[in-house]
Image 1 (spheres, one colour):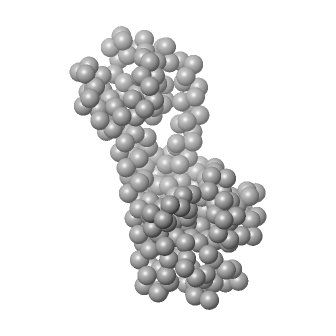
Image 2 (tube, rainbow, N blue to C red; image 1 turned 180 degrees about the vertical axis):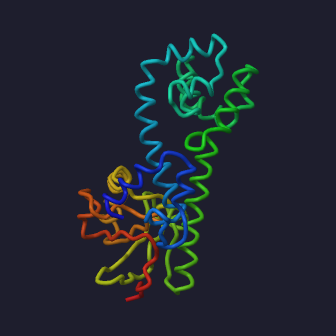
Length: 264
């Protein structure tokens, strides 16, 4: 996806309803001449952009954390405070608990297990925030984890059907290897003119933030350790943006398993 198209989509994606209205099958057009897009691609763009903007708002909200606590102590519900400050519900919970001197690990545990909260009112309001927050909190984390595993398994199954032998990330870790891609091939494969030694699966949209972060966090090291490889951004990626991963000759990006993949 080109940046211009991405920005046009972002300007139209303000809620989950917008995701539904713009999603459809293939490249058919609606009455206004707009292309229908894959739902998962649109939701990934919407959700990731929301998280980026929410994180920026949350940083600003740190300046108002004492006010947040004052409102809560005066009887206002955490969901109302969240809406008032324009902060994600679970981030509102985190800010309040941080202000009350809870540790980060303790907060994460309480978000996963709110029944451990002794205070009745706080427990009920935290549970309400968890239920309403589709982007942050344990439900969202679990969904992203399950989705990631789903697409990894899709990759494994396809390689098995194609008869391409490989070690999965779990196999590599059992051998004591860490910082590994999702797939390390037993023998290299060819995709177009590229030789591929490893494959990494990303159940996300490759926007500028993630293209930079993924490359710095892991992809660059895979190239250094294992040679050239392929990264699959299943929900698409920005094609015409100035980021290192797009300039690295040792990496090719795709949004699916290429049909021309073949053993050498």
